[in-house]
Structure formats: structure tokens, C-alpha cells
Length: 245
Length: 245
DNA sequence: CAGTGGTCTAGACCACTTC
DNA sequence: AAGTGGTCTAGACCACTGC
Image (cartoon, rainbow over the protein chains, first blue to last red):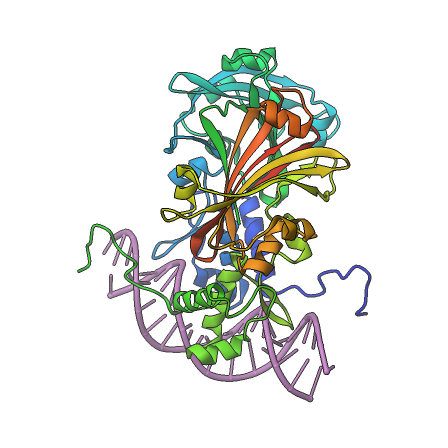
């Protein structure tokens, strides 16, 4: 039974199983973002393994940014509420340097039937609706970002434009506290495109101006896609920054 | 002596020190890319620590992609010669899917005085020269990439256009085998720009076409900047892909 | 001072590769 | 069978936080 054509993980270390169980607890909101999880010793007892094994499981989840370790205090569920996390998913920075605070202006909010692409990427069932939001983000009076957002209506049922406008922080913190949805990772496709008349209007630029198009799919626990975001950036005085490791 | 305004790392774990020593061995080419480093037990003896401590040091270097562990075989110095690594620093992919093989066409090769920006970023001394290379990359007969590259002449002394043309693989593998320079990480600044007449000519596109501008600084061991690369991509049928974690 | 995560050790055993 | 990395344990001690 050794030489199979598709060598399935014939062996699963203990810490992987622990990791899977911790992940389940996160998915089921047993511990909420920002809260502390039980101590390593408690978890070791609960799962009947040594502290070192729990440790390795937590180490990996921390490396994946799902948990945050704080020496002397405990291990916490990662949250977009934290200061440091505001910019984890925002790679747009002013050419000058320091980070900026973007102001929101919502242009549209509607519940619609998704097109085939959106339905497929969000893995919707036939008949499922989506919420679509359009917004412009400004900095120092200049319009820099135009963004379209699609959310599955089932998960974000009850979301209103008023609630969005009232929310002071980043959207991913909003999703977290209102819909128990914590964003874990995202994939982006970047292109350069010319501004059409609509984009030119929103960003106060000539038609044909080169813009950065960023299409993002964001995922929660368990690789569930829960947001599509299509942004266009004016990169005349800011840029998208990326680190390759 | 406890409350200093700038609390310097008052404590340095053993494995950090081991890690630093391993890094030094990499920098001084004691072990070359692709070669195996001594086994964990040997290193434990050499540094007079337990295997577990060596293990943690190696774990971190492996996480940073400086070393590669292979169960049953040993731990190896990372190399750009490997298949998998061809695309670690190339985020441009066809919209369709599968990876492509880009063909090189060199347009310029000269040794010049760097301008102030290049000299500053590469941390050159007054009088130091740079090698500048221009190239176009094509796929299926279409010109997709125009790229300018700057290299410090001291490190890449003796580099010739002929050697570049003769080299079949990726450039970072070339740097590695010819100049003992292994690229460890890079930072990129991405913008959308209109094609000027020169770019339009190289890429066979109308003047004003929106292009992706990618400015990269690449670093070797010890965060030494050793290459600047300014690429422009035609993203009409391909895109820059990024994963946010 | 108690509780948390962080380091370090020593030893046993497992899984994979090579000869 | 020998050698490598990978897992797991148990225990000691250190560093940091908060009461």
C-alpha cells in the first residue's frame, strides 16, 4: 500500500489535528476576534497532549495571522480592530511616505441578482442575492479611489447604507463586529487600465488617464470567499507597495 | 538600568545567535546555493547547544526562504536554479492561467555613472559605476515587458552582454552562479502610467496606452540592495497577481 | 506573586531517503 | 541499516504582565 499514484497525506501529525480543532473553534466563533483563547496549559489538558504540541499548533496559526501571541498576557484571536491591522490589506501609500486616512463617500447601495462571474467566485447558490456597494475614497480633498464591492446577501443580511455611513473605522472591522465575519486573506489581480467617462468623472481626471485596477477576492476562515472588491486607484501621487519574500 | 527610553533588545535568545552565525556562513559563501548545510546534530555540536535550539534557528531561516528543508536528505541553501523558484519574483501571469516562458531581447548594455537616485538606493560610494541593461521580453511573438536594470559595477564586475545572451535561465540564477549573489527579497512600487513614444515603440502599442510600472529594489543576504529594476508591463492579456496574508 | 508565553534541554521514537 | 529531518514528551527555568 505504499506506491499510490496520488500519495494522499498518509500521516497526520498530532499538532495538525490540534490546529484543525483550534480552527474549528475560530470558525464557530467559540472565541471572538480580540478575545484571548485558553492558555497553552489548558489546551494541552483539553486535547490530552503536551504543551509543546499545542505550542506548535498555535505557532502556525500565529504565522498565518489568525492568532496573535502576547508574552505574559495570552494568545488572542486576530482582529481588524487593532491599529496595526488597518493597513494590512491596504497597499496604497502616498509617494511621499506616511500613511494616510481616507474619507468615504458612498455612491450606491443595492441588492441585486449577481452575474455569472460574481456568483461563481462567491460560490453562491442559484437565486442567492448580492449586496453591491459603490464608493469613492478621498484624501486631502482629492478623489483617489473608486471601488465596487459585492457581498453575499445571506451572510450580510440586514446590512444598510446608514450603518455603513455611521461606521467610523475600516470596513473589515465593521464586517467583524456586525456579521461575525473576519477576513483572513485575499488575492488580488492588478492591471493598468484607461479611465472611461464614468471613472474619469468620479476621480476628476481626463478620460483615458492610466489607472490601477485591483480586483480582490477576500476569504474568511476555511477559505470561504465572502467579498469581491474591484478598485481603481489614481496612482499619480500614490503607489501600490508590495514586498516579495 | 531598566527603564530606557529606547528599550534595546535587552535579551537575545540562543537560537537568535545561532541564526546570526548561520547567516554569516551564508553571506561568506561557506555553503553555496543548492548545497546541503551540516546536519542538525553536527551544528548542535559545533555551537554547543541542543538539537532543538539549532532546529528553531533553521526553522526561521527556512520560513524566510533562505534555507530549504528536505526530510531524509538534509537542509539546503535556497537557490534560484530550482524549478519552483523561477516564478517567485515574477508575479506577471497570463489572464488565461498557466505560466508562460518569456523570451529575452537585449536592447542596451552600458557602464555609466549613476544618477543620484540610483546611487542612493544602491548605497554606492562616490565614483562607483553601474551597469545598465535594457531588455524587452516577449511571449508568443508579442512584446509584453520592457525593463531597465541597474547593477553595481563592483559586485558585477566582468559582466558582459554576450554572457547574458548565452544564459538560458532566469537572471537571478545567472547572478547566483556567476557573481555569488543570491537574491533574498525585493520591494516593489506599482503605478499605472501612459506609454510614451519610446515605450509605445518597444511594446508595439499606441502612445498613451495604460501600462503597469513596477519599480523593484532587490536585496541579498544582510539586506544589501544589489539590483534596481524598472519594468513596464502590457497588462491587456496578463496581470500582476498578489496574495495578501 | 501568580499566570502567561518563551527558551532550552535530553531523550525517545517516527518518516523519509539512500546505499 | 544508517543518516537525515520531523514529531512528541516532560521538565526546568526565563521574561513579561498584571494584580
